[in-house]
Length: 437
Image (tube, rainbow, N blue to C red; front, top):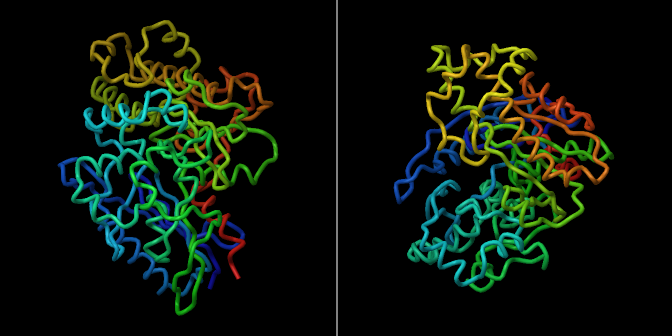
């Protein structure tokens, strides 16, 4: 029987249970996906009931498996999402999707009451992102759905709700508060005025500075349960443990996020306008971050390339880096004509400039990398802080065209495709070791 730490790693698409032995080597993984359902307004959202049932059933399955002896449990999940529970601990509404549109009238009312959009963004280090500023989700509920709002006893950030399922303990913590929620005044180091003025603060559990919060049963004994962590912040932990030198981490996937835990300056308005923001570490330290929706752009455009050139949807996986192809396409018009919403400018005739799928794909990655360089420089404060290394993890770290272009365009940085296996889950496991008896 192997002593281990269990992590539920809940992404937007993939839901996983990962087990690490006490040397932090991954020894087991179970993964599933769920179809989204509709919320009460007809928008797509997470199936919270199915997810909760899966977590509980998977836990029981591990309890019955005599190969594993779980010593601690923790959670890493996507952020900008709340589960609102009543006095009996039951969710009172859907787990609303952070891509759900915020009604314009509600947004206008908010900023009429609480001041200029840019001032708000600067105070909270959160670009104006609608429901992605998850504090505004609670404001929206209060204003448009008071019958739901009035049932809420506690509002839990998603990682802390997952923890609550097992520990029945309430808490808030900084990695969730600090992920572009619009809730935290970075200069005052306290909740923003609107959280207090609207009475939202009373719904938010006390902020903890401990990584563990309560216990759960495992085969008749009590084991510690983690508070839960926002996934991007959890992914930083193994890198911070690995090196004492300053670095940037480019975490790639649906979103490509450049994280700088060594930032020296407050966010500027120019950085905010260009989708630069702050996360926070568990201790409340600010982490400058810049985001690109690159994974989504890649998905959309490779589907278009497949249709245009009559190739399989995953044909891009066969395309090898070719410097001659890059020379042929570098002066052609960009396929991604806008870093925030290239889809609105897409015209099928744009692909007529390319004789082969391979040429078009090289141009797609070239455009992506050009935007990515801008984002890296923003988060890296134009690399004036002694940063010498860029770690790249996630899906694009395995894309040789992407990696070769990054290295060519950032000659002063050591670009390292250092893939920490299950880095997000590993971060969640690392912080639990000290709580194991």
